[in-house]
Length: 82
Figure 1 (tube, rainbow, N blue to C red):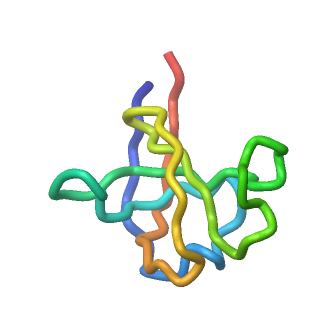
Figure 2 (figure 1 turned 135 degrees about the vertical axis):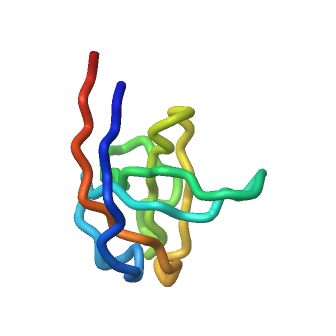
């Protein structure tokens, strides 16, 4: 997979639509990770009734839960699957 992107602006994750890519601080290490917001109503999320948001890390494939008030950097991205 190849990702070309440019940061756009900083907003609350709750304002992003499903499928939107964004940058956020990593939990386990320094730096930022590139994530994509996913649908929490897919039946796989344990807390789909909460106001939290879920995203997949595009580098590792790991799912992560975000507080709905988390500030993230929305990016304009082109994702190419090879």
